[in-house]
Length: 455
Image (cartoon, rainbow, N blue to C red; front, side, top):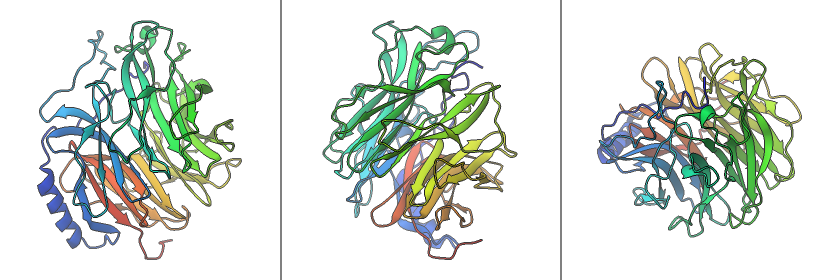
């Protein structure tokens, strides 16, 4: 299978949700739901407008409790996707022309603010549910965003997809003009990548420390050979996104080219980045690398375990990561498991192996699209999956750093086609969860449960 050969936008209903009515209905449902003591009913709100086609949300929370959300906008309801170059031979286009939208919710407000477009010109964003935007915030209240965008290489004159960074220094009122993180590719690799792109520097990850050190990562096709494996690149800013140091290649031509990179920080010195390595006969396994010196150097990749997944193509799966005082936690899909689903594992010390992975949702026919967040030793895992019905949003709490988990719970999201959750901790000791419901982004909050762990 060729690079990006299985890339698709999500096949989601294009019917309007009726956001206001849905929010009221869901709020009533939550008050009536038994056995769901973690839900905060008043927090169910619509993030995006119900007359727009939204997908792939991401959120961050600033110290004042404001929840900042970004997502891809595919146009008005009823509009078809903007198509890229026509591709022969039965192959689909790898081009996409979307926009990146932003809104915020402040404590005490009934809903999210007016949606605004971040990218300067319409259609600049290379947007898919499996190549999501990333948003984070620092202790100074600066909001940092990384997203994939369309462009043309000045070296070859051919279409490329690149990673872009922007920030807001005024609480989300306005965003600076984006900068391109990656260097311009000088090779025309159209014959390898196909689908209308000559190169790609996307599937980005980002993590921001409280002090404002911005760590960015992306998968890069520069130097790609017939093996069609990508390199992992890194670039950081130590002044809150004002200026970035030069890009650095930290893994060369051994990365699965379409599995989005994830990154997190712990304190100012520990940086963790995950990607999916390719080894042997197309074995594609997720792995984590750690820097203990703030990104100056990175250790060797440490695989998170599971049945070796042999695949002649890209799984298109990201890994969710989180840290607690006791360790690093991973949650990632493995298609070689039976049934295929999400595996949870942890490592107390990155010098050691990850623990034997466990299925986070053993009864699911399939589980995917993970997200995690922590408050102290409390860990919340969220994902979408199927368990005897249509795809739903599920979650589990651990109150002891991942040693044990409470039973699987399902969010009462109504009849919408739901998926692609994201989660962040809030300063009042709760968690904010967003997800895609049909083509509208929705949010609710979860409280940390008080009952004992189920062993």
